[in-house]
Length: 121
Length: 121
DNA sequence: GGATACAGTTTAACATGTTAAGTTAATCTG
DNA sequence: CAGATTAACTTAACATGTTAAACTGTATCC
Image 1 (cartoon, rainbow over the protein chains, first blue to last red):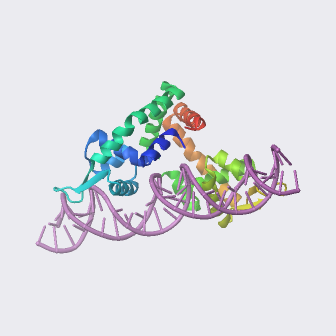
Image 2: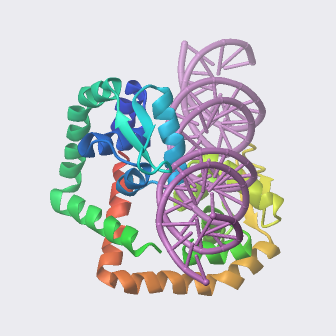
Image 3: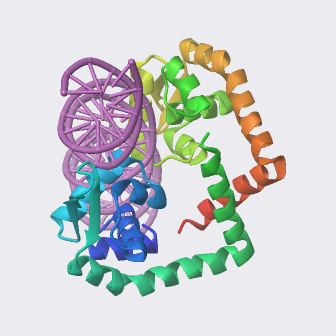
């Protein structure tokens, strides 16, 4: 189990749940479609993840008033606490990986993966 | 659904099942641990995949005589037929992707992913 | 204004990812 | 040689990936 997963496992969330929390933390309240896009998740996966996060009390969902098909997902104080308790360590772990691979190669990898993802083959 | 998945779906196998078949096709009969290593799959996943492939009649498993913990997995004639019926098209699809990304970038991506995998973070 | 198409999510079903625990056979050690 | 350890898989349990279908509001268009 990689160090990230160990850390998150201790915190009680999975990698994908963590990713969703971070996206919300960085962008503020937003709708599932946008979250899925930024967290690189398909909507059916996100649906389940949001249900889990909601049952854990880490996020809340409210129906949009203007368009009742649409939701707005927000982080709860508990969710914020979990994020700030782990953000620093999470960043350090990825920085360490970046150093291990070499910054250039690490950045190149992210670029290439992003390019591949955009090709949507 | 990407073109590879479309093709394999028509053939009745998943990407992972296809990967296992190709590894066996290239190396001949081999044991699950080696297959898992070459196909980049964890053993529990491979166990289920081999069960599926066996139930489809695409591979057979026999217990090793010298070490009865160990198995030897082989492709059946039906498995070979499926491989030769799809190998050419499969290669073309990946060649096309390689061209779309540019050979250099495609090769670089494979290198970097392999490097990341070896770091086993 | 009602049938119809479209948008945003959710459900369902099946396959794999991931970790821990279980099983059986081989090997090591005192 | 008996008991402990290791090896090779398998099972189990839970989470996500992936595709198709369903569901519920909104917008459209004759």
